[in-house]
Image 1 (cartoon, one colour):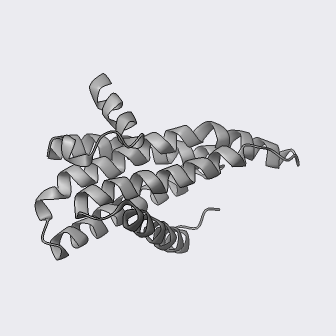
Image 2 (cartoon, rainbow, N blue to C red):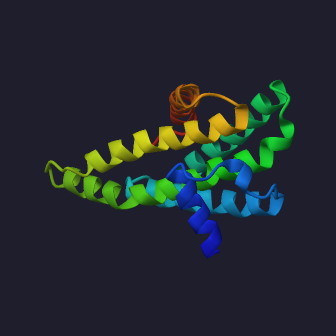
Length: 170
C-alpha cells in the first residue's frame, strides 16, 4: 500500500505517468472505492449531507469513467482504459483528501461570519488538479500538456454543471 501511495504522490508531482501502473481491474476497483470515500469526506467537510456527497462522488466517478471509455474508443486506444482510469481516480482521491482540512476551515469561518484564507489552498488545489489531469491525459492520448489541461478544464465545467443539476448540494 505504501508503494501505491508513493506512486500517486509522484503522479501528482508529475514525476510518474499512468502507463507506470499495472492494467488491473482489481486495482481500479480499489482506487474507485478510495475515490468514493474521499468524495464523501470532501462533501462532509463542505457541509453536504452524506447521501448528497456520496451521490455527487458516484456521479463524478462514473461520468469520468464513461467519458474516458468513450474517448479511448474514439481514438482507438481502448487498451489504455484501466491505467488511465486508475490514474485519474487515484490522483483525484489524493487531491480530494488534501482539500478536506481547508474545506473544514472555510466552512467553519463562513458559519461564524468570518473571512478565511482557507479558500487560497483550495484554489491552488484546483489548479494543481487541472495540471495533474492534463498530465495524465497527455500520456494517455499522446497530447501536449496544454491540450490535456484544456480538456481537464472543459471536463470540470461539464461535470460540475451536470452533477449540480442532477444532485443539488443542499
